[in-house]
Length: 128
Image (cartoon, rainbow, N blue to C red):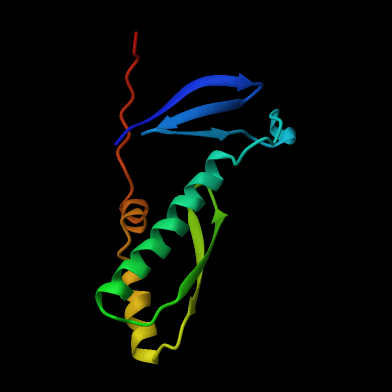
């Protein structure tokens, strides 16, 4: 899996290539950007929200749980010495409490949740 910041578009807006997709990232005008695309923090929130929803839907299908939809809201609530993220999940469908409980356990098993929770060692190298 690879993501590459391909080039600066304007001010602080970059185009990023992942597989065959191109996405953009920018920052707000207060930070010197044009606010033309989601910022990097929002992409982190998008990753957790989408991974949570996908993981829960896959589990529900495998277990024949009548989950019709999942709405996930993510907010980075603290950043610095201590980092914190809030996640609100709304389950849509005719679900029993037992099914809801099992789905909530599965939410914590999404790969992005586990990755963020465990942290990551990041190595950087200069490329010619």
